[in-house]
Length: 230
Image 1 (cartoon, rainbow, N blue to C red):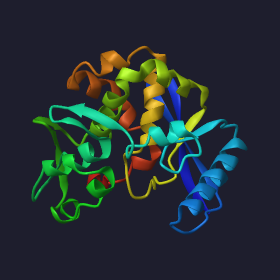
Image 2: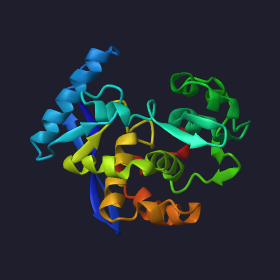
Image 3: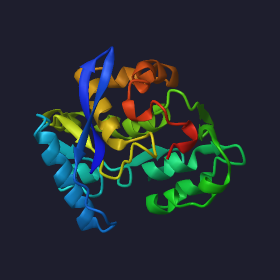
């Protein structure tokens, strides 16, 4: 058995994202077909709890919308042009022993996450995105900001997400990491419902103020150290 979170948009200023842990039978293996079986099993278990329909947000999603919303598919506009969201996140990490490794920006998303320097530079101490420094707390602030900034121009299209009761990412292991693209999608829906996305993204301070309290309400991240952030 395995347990993975379903993230749902709450849509109130006091609480933006709700997390529900769902247990299901795990299909071991790294093949894509096995991961898709796990998505199906998880969604079936969630449906029995009234969580339906769900959108898997990853490259393993059965829906094109879910695959397009993967951090490995999204692009963000920067001063050096359009770069992969995953490359932007990984290349902005600052460690005790080095970083940010901005050359990662120009690589593809898959290579970015596997860069050896991310594993050998010591503890993560923050982020630096084209000179803008981001702290480790709130825990998911920088990742959320990158993701939502990439999606901000497409708000009318993204209102389709309001159809879903929740969002999942079968690749996300709550025992190993903190940031999750499915959680950020739920955050996006909450902000769109509140008509607050543009205001939240106006400045770094505004964004941190919006997400700060919600960052500490996630069960899966309560006891994790930030050095585990992936």
